[in-house]
Image (cartoon, rainbow over all chains, first blue to last red; front, side, top):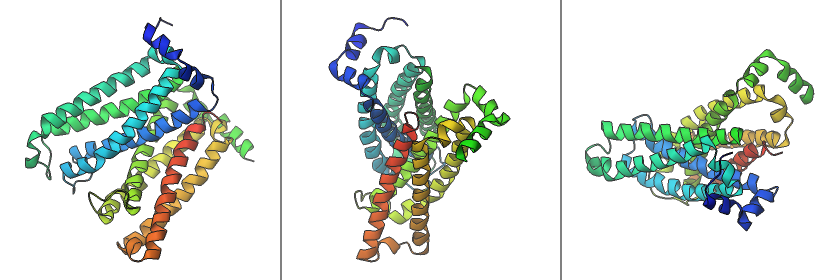
Length: 163
Length: 161
């Protein structure tokens, strides 16, 4: 296994990381909570993506759907990230060297970039397509987001089969 | 009896075919998790509305009208992907207490969703028309949320029990 950066090794050796690693119940519990919150993140993001693609919630305005779904997304994401970080610390060097884990992290960064572009650029003229068919840029944001989040779930599952 | 069935299933050509495909289990599990994500999110949004924890956005009637048909579709995907996983690893699933608990909880959740939706389809105001029904609706919503939580937990714990 290639050497991980000193910061990653130090993280793994911290007392709380050791406690999680040595405990018989902490890892399964944190993993369960990570999966639970991730399901809500993926479900609420998927709902917005399908609306952008014109495949679901067609009777709802995009701005209204986004307003009601985003609090769910961010709250769940906060908890999923917290428990994900705790899981990571318990086997930091193993995860650092794991290819599916790296793809998962890359996809999360790309999903964040996609969201920023959508909110600050594509959504600027939302009033003209809020209740109708979204323009190509918005549909593209929906496809990219959906593909990235499906990959995040898939690579997340693959981590379990490759560590 | 379950052990005998599990042994028979794991000896079938189909089970061995799936088990020998390295990508099969992770792929089907991914589809299973995506379908769980859809069901848990839609049920949670409806239940939070029924419990008056959230109040903005469309009415419960509009939410249920849009979500419930999709909940049933995703439940079918869950059933099919779950059956495929069980065929591939019968002993891991059928002989596992977390799996058995999950199946019981899924059954209860399906019945609750059916009861909630049957009354709702006949009368959109059914769950809000009297204090008793509001209490019953709230109880069903709370139970449904707890069941979602326990089903996800039991599903993940299959790997550890």
